[in-house]
Length: 189
Image (cartoon, rainbow, N blue to C red; front, side):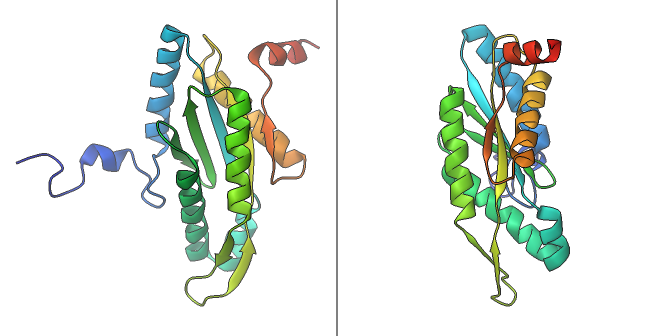
């Protein structure tokens, strides 16, 4: 009997978010560790996008969890449609998503993030159960480029700080993380 011929592979199921069908947090953690190791060994780069749906809690509270789940699936589909090749979109947790862009520098990562942000903001959310228009949703995005010998934890922390900056500056925008060097200089002040 061939593996995966009749039923989904157990490993694939374990690495997929059940609601959005994106890679899950476990899969993301494995992939980013593997990619950072490869980039350190081969002198390559990658960029990470950390995204959060703006005002998701109030949306979920106002319209219910069924509509909230619908929104999460819409965001996942928008992200999947907006990336290509080796790029990997994952559900990081709750209403947070991450994308890994191999062989992509910060400037190109910002362009991808801006494209995804605009694509999502242009979509109308419609309650599937009654056809009611619920408006639009937006997301804030933090973008960080991986630098040689940087820990994955530091990269995630920089991307998360950039995401917080985007939210703090009014949401529905993209913010770039400082380089590790710029960050250590600002901490020293």
